[in-house]
Length: 222
Image (cartoon, rainbow, N blue to C red; front, side, top):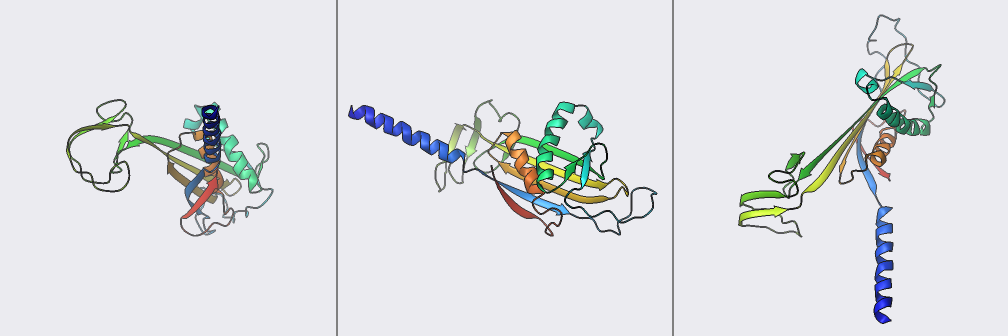
C-alpha cells in the first residue's frame, strides 16, 4: 500500500508540474513598426493626397503576391491569424468596400545549434541524430557552467531552434500610400508554428496605430 500511495503521489505531482509549465510560455518578440510621413512620394501619378488616418472601424482587404496565390489554403490560414490581430485593434475586414489593403508575410526557419551557438541548417552534420566532432573543446559544458577541455570523438543530441518572422503592410487604396508597416521576429525552442505566429502578429500591432520609435520588445503569453 505505501508503495502504491507513493507512486500515485509522484504521478499526481508530475501531472501538476507538466500542466503548470504548459501554461507559463511567453513569446518574447522583437517589433519594429513605422508610420511613413505624409510628405513621402506616392508610387503612382495619382493626385497627392494625405492618407486617411487609421482608426477603429477602418475597413481592409488582403492583397496577395503571386507566390502567395499559388498556395491559397496556406494564405487563407495566415490571413485568418492576421484577422484576429487586426480586428483586436479595431479594424474591420470588408472585401467589397475596403479603404485599405493589407499584405501579410510570414517566415519560419528551423536549425540546430551546438554548445557554442553555432548554427547547422537542415540535418545535423555527420549523422541524422547527433553532432559529432573531433578536436579540442574549450567552453561551457552542456550540464552546468564551467570549462570543458578534452580531445576525442564526441556525439550528443542536437538542440533544435526555430526562428519566426511576420510583417504587415497597410496601404491606403485611394492614395496608394503606405500608412503603416510593422515587423516582428522571435527565436526559440517551440516548433508549433500555428500558435507562435498569432502571438507575433499580435505583438506586431501592440502599439497600433501610433508605434514607439525604434525597436521594442513585446512579450505575449501563449
